[in-house]
Each structure stands twice: as structure tokens, then as C-alpha cells.
Length: 328
Image (cartoon, helix red, strand yellow):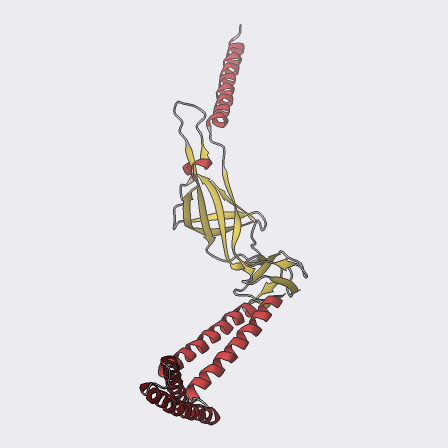
């Protein structure tokens, strides 16, 4: 074999060895390197449900899904005839209590005072007659002419007329002097109670007109016009679009850089943009969200944490449900 052939064989051997080393290195790199993992979450939003304190039938729904409402905008109107009936009852009770309070404050009318005086005078006249009759019967009894039974009957009639006269005098004095302080206070308390009942029913009537308590977007409307809704049943849901955040379920070995207060970048596929976000909440998801080890040696269970973060700057068009991706 010539020197030139030997030289070529050596070169081929070196080249073959080098090729094997490179191939093995590439295979090892892909075999032992960790695959790039993405953490995916989604955009969420604060919501509140519109509901009524009173049951009723939907008369009008003045918004539709997707509408943006401001504080004070009318959302829906309910018909509640039972509440209107309670209002009439409460107003009648208030009027009656006010009349009673006025009568206690002003006292009896002059005609009532005069009538009470006349009743008293009649009772006094009856008492005078009964007293004289009893005295006459008593003398006859002392003389042995009248029986004891007749004497007792005259005495009983005298005492009855005496009690009647005292009662008539008391009624006259009450009419003349007016109601006592306690009676006036009781009448005032009845008025206050009646007014409170009217205010309570008024608050229920106000509940038949549902207005927006916060600015936001109508995301869901549940009943249709004409349907009945119960107390506390949701009528619609308002999304507060100014309060958006992202929620991620993160395995604990991927929590690096996601501590509360830390800032990271999240990719928004909907806009092909990356936005900065700041972590404000982290909580263990519990035993139901544990990554169990598949081998007994060298592995361990991993828990999942719920991580919430808010964008540090607004992104126009960002909406609930859109995906967010944290890339390693």
C-alpha cells in the first residue's frame, strides 16, 4: 500500500470518528436537554350581578349584551303589584297614626267637652236622687215599716250612682285637660312606626327599577321580558372592564420569578404582543392539584399554585377569556 493511500485512510478514519462524535453529541443534547415549557393562563374580569330584593315580572330590559353602561343608567324595570298594595296599606296606616297623634296633641273638641260635662251633671243628679231615696228607705227601715231587702236595694242603687258620677267626672276632666304626656308620646311613636313602614315599602318599590351601580359592560342577560324573577335572582351580569387580571395555574417548580410583587412579561396571542404584568396574588390549589411522582427514586410530588397578575399598562382591546402565555 502506498503512502498516499495510507494517508487517505487516516483522513477517512478521523473524519468518520469526528462524525460519530458530532452525531452522538447532537443526540445527547436533544435527549438530555429540557423541553421548553410555556405557562398558559387567561384574562379574567371583576363582575357583579344585578338582582332585585323583591319578586316581580320583567316589564322592560333597556340594555342588551355588549352594551357599555354608566352609573345610574336604567337596566331593567319590574312589575310588582304586591309591593304597590303594601304601599297603600302603609300609607293608610301612616294617615291613621297621624290623625291619632293630632287628636292627642290638640285634645278634645269643645263639643266633646260640653257633652262630657252634661253627662257628669246628669250622673250627679241621679246620685242626688239615689242618695235621698236611700236615706228615706233607711228611716222607714229604722221605724220597722220597710224590709231589710228594700233597704239593701236602695243602698246598692245609691253606690252604683255614686260610681257612675265619679266616672262621668273623670271623663269630663280628661276631655277638658287633654291627653296625658304618655298618651301623646305613644301617639308620636305610632306615627314614627308608620313612617318607617312607608320608607321600607318605598325602598322595595325602588327595587323595581334596576339601575347600574358601577360602570361596565353587560356580559349576560338571563330572563326575558314577561318572565318572573324571584327575590335575589340574577337579572344580568355587568363586567367591570377597568379591573382585568390574568390567572395562571403554575407547578411549584416553575414559580421562579413569579413571587408576589414581581414583574414578568406575558405574550398575548390575540394581538401578537407581549405585556408586562405584576403578581399580586398566589395560593396553593390544594391536594386535588398535585403532580404525583411517577418513580419512587429521585422524584417527589409537586403542588400547583394559582397565580394572579395585573397588567402594569393598559392594552386596548384586551378582553376576558383571552390567552396569556409565560414563556421560559
